[in-house]
Amino acid sequence: MDREFIAGRQKGLQNYLNIITTNHILSNCELFKKLLDPNNYSADYTEIALQQVSMFFQSEPKWEMAEPLKCIGWRIRKKYFLMKIKNQPKERLVLSWADLGPDKYLSDKDFQCLIELLSSCLHPYIYHVTFATANKSSALLIRMFNEKGTLKDLIYKAKPKDPFLRYYCNPKKIQGLELQQIKTYGQQILAVLKFLLDKGFPYGHLHASNVLLEGDTCQLLDLENSLLGLPSFY
Image (cartoon, rainbow, N blue to C red):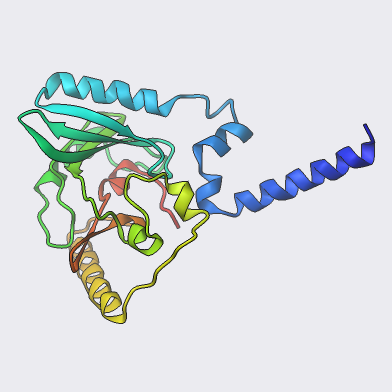
């Protein structure tokens, strides 16, 4: 085969990869990581999460898994499962499991204690955690499943169970917010950020995917990310 042809194809492929790496979501996609660095990303994190969740079910038999929620988030080491309570089968909840991140700063004891305390945090602009537990290497939290989804789902006209790459990386329909919505949500977000700041709680994970909508009220998600030491989106 012609060398110039091969060199041209290699250059084109390199340019294509360079473009992908400039997109934060695409460059952190599990499939992309495994393609470029298979040695360091060979683990099956869904299987690891299932093992941890199965151990949780053994100690908390009232919970039951309905289905895994695949590809709804961009973090490689954070997985989601649709849950239900055995004696309340119509109630749907979401379990999130995440491994420790590179920025963990708490001792194991403090980390586990603070994760478990998240279920007792009550604030009108924080989405309630139904259950939370942790071990030395990961955390597991359960929240009610919200059919409307996040602020980003609203903007991209997506559903919370849809694969995030389909909408967020190649959006076909985007809708803006009304001025009054921007004012309302902005005021609420500033209020809850001040609340967390006054309590000395770090929250560096504010973006549209972590803002859940309940009518005219927005509520923050994933307070556990800072405790886990997960890197921020921005």
